[in-house]
Image (cartoon, rainbow over the protein chains, first blue to last red):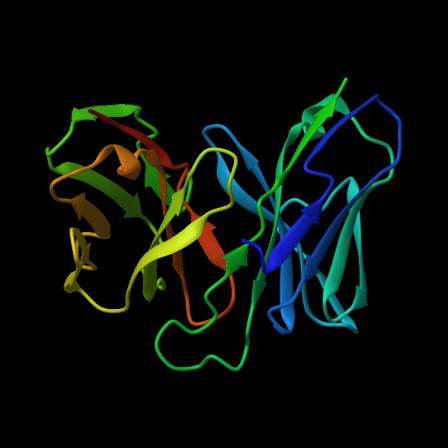
Length: 117
Length: 110
């Protein structure tokens, strides 16, 4: 987990506030992902980026936006937070050059616990 | 219907018991099957990875895939308290996208 860091680790905010979650990685991977985890629902993909100029929506992108500031940095923003965005958020990375064996194994950060009141 | 179904448990076993976890899936295009382990307040980490039907063993862990039944399993032999965690199955087609199960929380009692 030390190769993928997320800040903040915990955040409590109020409805309507703008929130940014940040992710940095030292693995040198080109691909980065944002997931949210909810009890009973597992991990769901919010956005993903295959390189600095490539941003794609995942399965639950509404209400979220992202920015890939550099190969090592990928931030997630909630423009106007709402209570049902309360969840555990994970950043992950993978290396597109890993074609043999695991191929595209994703490495996860430690997570950010976000509470929207 | 979810693409990947996993019983969330929780599952509580005594130390030394065999832990049996499983997932079913509906998409026959899935080719790669993984098990992630997630300790409390940590991110998931890859535990086992399999590509084809059959068994794969790694120490006390055995992963099984039955593509004909769309069913995967993870067995933990001689379970230890340090195995207490949430175990998530994940699978993907021949691309980047992982589809996760909901995760099963396992507690191994000393």
